[in-house]
Length: 114
Image 1 (cartoon, rainbow, N blue to C red):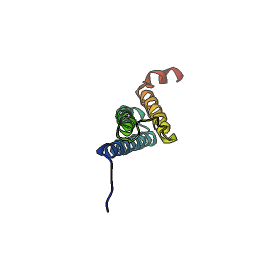
Image 2 (image 1 turned 135 degrees about the horizontal axis):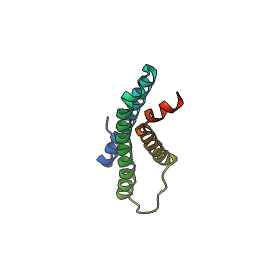
Image 3 (image 1 turned 90 degrees about the horizontal axis):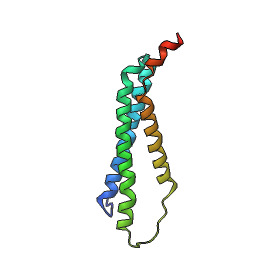
Image 4 (image 1 turned 90 degrees about the vertical axis):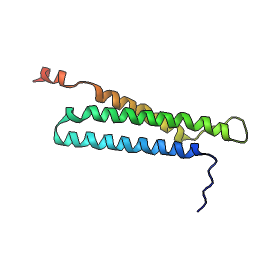
């Protein structure tokens, strides 16, 4: 099979996005397992670090894509990107918010309610 890519940047962007998705899934599974086991505080820092890593990977891909796309296009004119590009930025923002929420210390407030 012959795949014609215009550049390695497309493969790099795809690898960054898929790696970010895999790291996010791993973080989700880690937090789900810690929730089911009842040991909330043990895995939350690791889940937050994984989410921060996924955000960095995804933001790198979302910055790389439009720069290289416009650079490699034949017509140097105005381009509009599809709704998936906006969805990528939205998911990066929500992952960043989730990572920040995982960093919050909830054990300080538990004693006030008992």
